[in-house]
Amino acid sequence: MAEDLGRWAAASPAEVAARFADFDGPWWIAGGWAIEMAVATQSTVDVTGGRLGAPGPAPSIRAHDDIDVLVLREHHVAAHDVLAGWELWAADPPGTLRPWSAGERLPSAVHDVWCRPGRDEPWRIQIMIDESAGDEWISRRDDRVRRAVTEIGSLTADGVPFLVPEVQLYYKARDRRPKDDQDFDAVVSHLTPGQRSWLDDVIKLDAPDHPWRAPLRD
Image 1 (tube, rainbow, N blue to C red):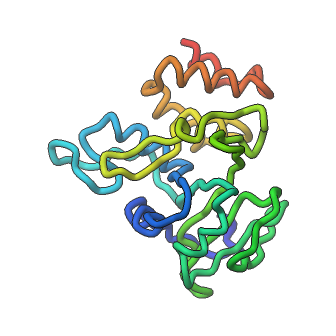
Image 2: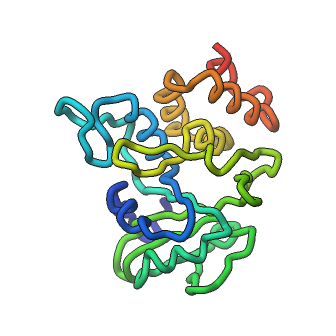
């Protein structure tokens, strides 16, 4: 995160789940935490803090500097209700932060909101806003990429919703960073044939030579 925008002290997945429990619409933990949770569902330990089996350290792919929460634009204004009293700042393209007032519907170009408890507090949660039409999720990057809203999320053992790994990897595939390759390597072996096929299909829409395609088809 850019240091001139202030420091981060990311909320835990458990804190996010508690705050968004009454959110008026579906929501999912996204970003690197979503990949962590996808891998953890194959483990005896739940990364949100709940034990699934024998004691042991929670699996960790890498450190997480922030935590992302994905919501649909249809419901995004309700973020003020679950983060009452917090400062919410919208990232106007190409990335200038400005205060987001309660009740304001953000324009379609804005899909990133930074949230903190107060002016002198660190940023705790980053909200990402995606599009939808009826029961269909639509990628904010390419409206050809669509799925049923009910198909883009999964649950941890404690019932915390997270973005399914193939959708999160689709977002990570463009302009990928070393941590995105790390996330891909950590989760690719857990993907089903259907997840691999879907991800390969959407990546090749604008990156037919993407290096992730070969391991997806192996």
